[in-house]
Image (cartoon, rainbow, N blue to C red; front, side, top):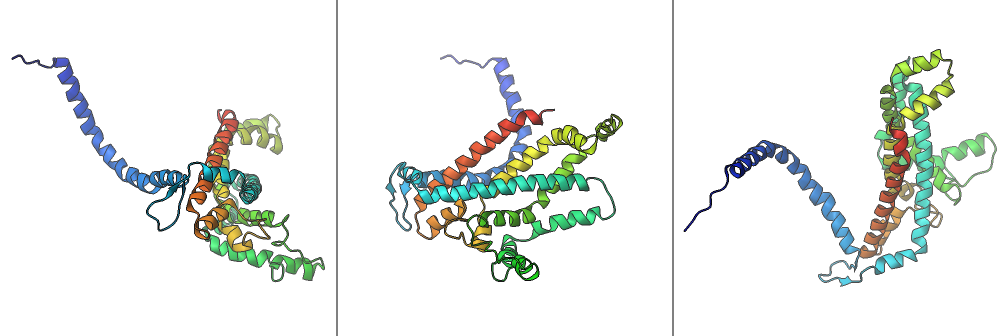
Length: 308
């Protein structure tokens, strides 16, 4: 009987690996809680949602009927889904564009300290700490046709016509978007202020010496160097506003008709009003794919401008 001894080099290599693993073990232990919650509350629901979308899922049944891609095929022919997705896209585009432009301009104005600048920062950011339910109640008090503050000024004080802000299909989505901008633009404003402070002041001084005006300085220095921050703001704002739910749900109820109903509202109603959980899961999967694709496109379009 013969025994084969491991080469000394192999034994030494195994010993080094074990020592390295022992040194790295505390790092893995620190990561473990996050990985656990990530798996339980994010990864598992995603996989479960994909699975449920392949079934005609009925609540309280042990055995569910497998239908494959039938939910996705039905979704392609669902006119209401494409309508509410269009409403969501319109709301997102208006909100993101106005939010980004307004937040950047206000951030440029509040970049340097002056008397009252801190108070203005707090004032602009303050609506962001309110809950969406409070914002909804405020939105109703502003846009309501009969008791709204806006119509009070337009009709009573100015003698104009009484405008149905929440009853006109062409106005309701912009009204909701402007309410959301007032509520949410404080966060991107602070992000832009932080990004502006990372731009070296020497560049502005050199531009001033060369005779560049404020508009030229903003166009050729501020905008190119703020692009990494702008990419972050645009992507996060896009993802947040594509999932809009509470504003149309509280302020306009999705009306008139389906004019302000969002994709998230349609998903919620499909799942918890009609109990079509398989179909609702397919809606969530499609929405997730849309957001992933658009995010990748945004990164690819803005990547070159962020490299400086």
